[in-house]
Amino acid sequence: MWGVFDVCDILRGYDFTIMASSKKIVGNSKLYHHILPDLIPPIDGGHTLRFFEYPNDNEPKIFIEVIKKFNFIANSVNWDDIKQDNNFNTSIPKIIDNAIIGYVKYHKANIV
Picture (cartoon, rainbow, N blue to C red):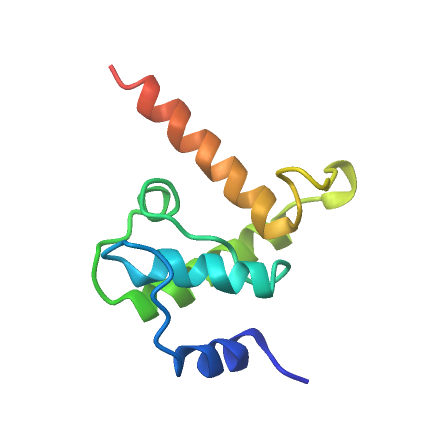
């Protein structure tokens, strides 16, 4: 049985240039999320990294820390009342990501 980090180690061997972004973590996490939607969250600099207050260095360590934090959140929620759909809430990591995006957008708009 393969774990999420085994798959990431295999994919890390390829030099993907997914997006025109200075942060490889952004494009690579989105690629990994499409391959393993129930295990890997999509990560972006404007919301996810800001929410967890991560700096712009040491992306491999940040990637692992973000996955651990998403896992902690996922295990802290009663998912019986939360519906997945085929639009935006396609997986538990994506539902958490959507909540983070909403939280960051709300707080950016309401900064006095």
